[in-house]
Structure formats: C-alpha cells, structure tokens
Image 1 (cartoon, one colour):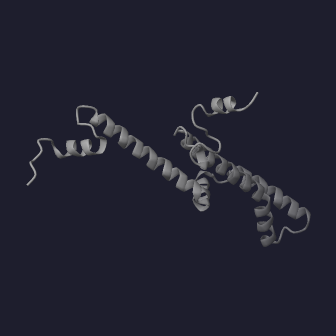
Image 2 (tube, one colour; image 1 turned 60 degrees about the vertical axis):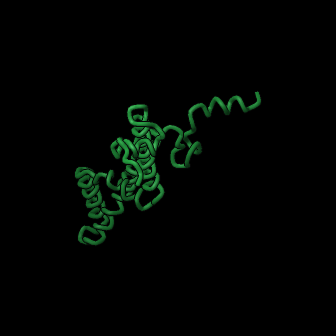
Image 3 (cartoon, helix red, strand yellow; image 1 turned 90 degrees about the vertical axis):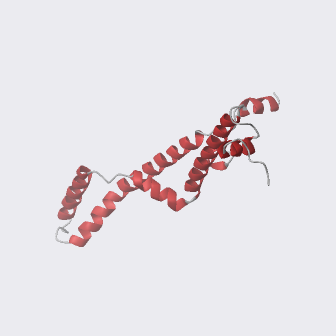
Length: 158
C-alpha cells in the first residue's frame, strides 16, 4: 500500500499538472494554465460562430432593428399617392406589393449594416487575443503576431 501523502488532494493535482509545488510557484502556474484554457475556449467559441454562415446571419439579425414607423408611414403615403394618381387606389394587393418593394432597399441596407456591425464586433473580440490572426488562424489574415511587420521589413531587400 502506498504511503499517504501529507499534501491535500488539490496540492497534489497542482503539482502533477504544473510540476511545481503549491506555495513554490505551483499556484500561479495553475492560474495561468486555467486562464489560458479559458481564453482558448472563448477564442474557439468565436471561431465556431464565425465559421457557420447561418449562425452569423442569425446573430446579425439580432442587431438589426425594425424600420422606423416614420419611414414606413412616409413610404406608405408616397406609394398611396402614386397609386391614386395612376388610378390604382382600389387595388389592395398591388398597394401591399408596392409598399413592400419600396421598403426593400431600406431593409436591405439595414441588414447590411447589422452584418457589418456584428462582424466588426467579432473581429474586435478575436483581436483581443494577440497573434490569433483573426478569422484566418494563427499569424495569418489580417492580424499578425507581434513584431511581424518589423520581421517582414528586415527580410525584404531594400
């Protein structure tokens, strides 16, 4: 039977994971390891969200606000006047289609703005991790590792 250790179980776990005893750098090393793990999980979650187009669309639509009541009212009034001038005031189906068509560019622009806002927010959260390289993996794409620009300048002949 192995001899019972005088250390508590958590001290044994910390020493096994970090190679350092608790109270001699093991606690700090364990906290660093836990922090790195949490950071990696967050980074993975953001990458998974950005890798799935349906998830990106869903999240960006949550940022999209409805068109303002004033805009809808003004478009409906303008469409109603134009249809009355054309002699189509008594055609409710045509009126509904015309209003929908008139509002479509505004709705499209609003969706585009929401998508840009969402992707910018995800890009900022990816940028919080130095050297991740954003959407394209470590050290690639639009976020290089620290000192990459200087290294590239040194390697480029003058």
